[in-house]
Structures are given as structure tokens and as C-alpha cells.
Picture (cartoon, rainbow, N blue to C red):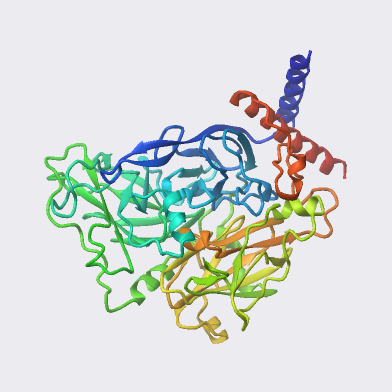
Length: 589
């Protein structure tokens, strides 16, 4: 009888979904587990997704409802985050510890969200305890609907390349080093698609390392999506003798221009159009090499893969293509970053120009200057800070604490400017204004280049410079075609300024993407509430499968063992009913 009732409601839900024109669903199972791999010739424990390292690509279409059943087969808590994807009205699905209770070992949890009005190249990865340093990551691609034209000819193929610095120590050893007050030191190498370097140099690269080979056909043009999934190192990406026509970054089409190489910082994603227009006398090198480091010490830390034409007549040989020659001109990379502009004449996920939002003429309502410094000892522990505050992750997630009125879970007193006081550990977050327009200045007084990320949003990168930011720097801002993205670099001894329109209700993580700095506390949250929302119109309700922890641990029931297919059906039914009842509600008003 119970199964009959369940199927009855499923049918009713599907019927109503069809009648009301609900968007399609895409269902995925992601199982995270440990496997042994030797990407740099040394056997080590890595985190695989569905047995693969890196994990499989997730490929959906704009406006799809995405249902991801995540099973945790690790020996520690897990959360998955969907970097760059704007969870409209639903920070419940964000997958960071300030908004979600972790998934315990041997448990599974189903994420469900809609990729509303988004296209482009994104990432997924585990967000807890340095786990990304051991793997668990993959590409998340959102493609256009067929009725929306691309601002370029349809490519002949789509290729994903994941680059990143890599340690032969796993994430647990890396975080032990940080817990003991030590820096991580130089990585052991750079991986391309989870594999070590091609043996371009018999002295620097030992024998027996498996390398990546990208197979292409002559004369064809491919969309190559490149993601930096590393720990902390900026990498210069280049393909020998081939131009990289930049087309998109983190969900926004760019003004198309050719680069011979591009610096890609930790957590960033780019799409290039690359035409296979060279002769096939030999294969070609694909290179990802470290930037802003002592090159003489880091020679071994270079990723090399092979671009193989189907009619190639020989192996790649000789020296690698040169990196940028800017040893005495550190502004090269900064100028390159600011040359990345938005294509204001292209349609995005909707049939209207992306540039129709005139961000440059909107009055700023809030200004935050976030200053980062080198890690310091606070109460005997190595910590990183924004504005002198090292964030302590709450026992009870922030938004969950709001719903159940848990007192003392966090403080709404994050300073808008650095304060003249000793650094401290605290649970201080930003009390942001719904529908406000915020200017954030990222002042990096640390000794390393960093990347800054904001969940739930894209922001306009309006300015960069070296030295201390002052109000006079606003005169140099790009107020017309600044690129919009979710992850941006901040050079050591410099600043980056961004604008963001706060139209997405929820609690959203604001952090350094450098894993060591993030783990040491360089993050906070923005809490954005709509005081006039009395009917879940601007934020979806707490999901029915919410996990409970901290002060609400007593509310967590033991997880019932059920098949993945049942989990997906139930999740799909839940999302359909939310959509249906929302449409009924709005239709009656």
C-alpha cells in the first residue's frame, strides 16, 4: 500500500510538472572513496569520484533541475561544493560548513538545485579539511539551450583539462603540517587531468610516469575548458605553437582575443577556442608551469601533456614553449588579467545581451575592505585572517541556527575595514543588505598571490593594482565591460576591487581559494535576508532532507538505508512539488 501511494504521488507530481511546464531534471550519483594512484610515480591515497580521479564531468543544460546523490565512503565528514554555480534562493545546497551540516562517513545526502539562467565552465569539489588536495574534484559544465546562439561557431569538440599543483602527501598529512604551525612548502609537481608530466627532460622527469594525451583532428576547432584545481599555485597554461582564443570564464562570455599563454589562478576556469592549424610533423606540448615562484627551485614543478594530431608523424621533443618573460616586470600578469573583458554584445543564458546590466552607473550602498596578512600565531595556533579575524567554523550552520533560533552561533559584526587591534579567532560574519550594491576591495598584504571566491554570486572585476588601495583608485575602475566571475586573483602586495549586486537571499561563503589559507581561517560569510519575505518567495524553505548537527544534533535521525534510485525519485518528486506549488501560489495572487 505504501509503495502504491508513493507511485501515485510520483505520477501526480510528474503530471503536474508537465502541465505546468516544469524544467527537466538531470540525476547523478557521486560516490567518493579512497583509491591508490601514482600520478608522480609514488603510490599514494587519492579521493576518487565513482572510482575515477579526477571525477567525471557533470554536464547539464541551462535551467535544468540538478539532483546529485552524494555517498560518502571516506573515513571522515564530507561536503561537496559547486564552485561558481549560483544557487538561486537556496544556500542550503551550497555545501560549505557554514551553511550545511557535514555528511558523516557511510552516509549519503542528496543535493537539489536549479542551474537557473547560467551557462559556462564550473567546478565541483569537497570543501572540508583540505580534501581537495587529495582529489574529489571534477568539471561542472552548463550548456546553452538550443534556442540561444553561441557567440562563436559551434566547436567540433569539447575538451576538459584540469591542472593543479600536487603533493605526494595526502590532505591529512598536509593539514597536520598546518596544525603544527608549518607552511606546506613547495609542491611535488603539477598534474594535468590527474597525471604527471610527459618526460620532456630525462633529468627533471623520472621514467615510468603516466602522462595525459589529448587527441585531436587537424583543421578542427575545439572548445578547451581549463580548470585550476590545485592547492595554492598560479599556473601559466599554454599549448606549443597554438593560439588560445579566450571565449568564456566562469559563466560569462568574454571579448574574444588571442593569447599565447594565460595565467590561471587556483579555483579559476576558462574556455578557449583552439584551432588545430599546425602541421603534423610531430606532437605538441601542453604546459602548465608555476608562476610567482623561484623558477630555479621549482623546475620539477611543471605539468606537461601531449596534444596529438590524428595524422601526427612523430613525438614531441625539444624544450618546452617559454613562459612569460616578466621577471623584471611584475605588472605583466596584472595587465593580462585586466585585458579580460566581458562580451557585452553576446547573449548569455537568456536571449538578451549580458551587458544590458549597467553596473557602472549603480550607486554603491556598502564598502568592505578585506585585508589579508601572512599567517600568524593566535592562541598557539597558526591562523590566517581577513581584517584581523580568523574565522572559526560554527558548530551549528548559520542559516540553520536562524531557522531554529539558536543563540550564539555567530556574530553579525564583521568589520568593514581593518581594525587596529590584535588578530583574533571569531565567528564574525557580514550583515549584508538585500538588494544592496557592494564594493569589495581585496587588499593582499600577504607574501603570496591569492584567489578570492564568493559563493552564490558573480561579481564585476573593476580594478587591480599594486600597493595600498585608496579611494583615488576608483578613478581607474572599468565601469563598462568588466568581466563578471566568481573567483579572482589578488597579487601579493596589491589589491583587487569588485562590485556585486546582492539579490540572492541566503548565507554565502566568502573565502580564499588557496587551500592552506582557507583551512587556517581566511573566510567569512555574508548573511543576506529579505525582511519582507513571509512566504518563501525569495528563499526556498529548509529542505526536507536537511542534516542536523551542533546544538541541533538531537534532531538528527539515523539514516535509513535506501537505494540511490529511490533517493533520486524522492528528491525529484520534492523539487517538482516545490515548483508546482510555487506556480500555484503565484497564479492565485
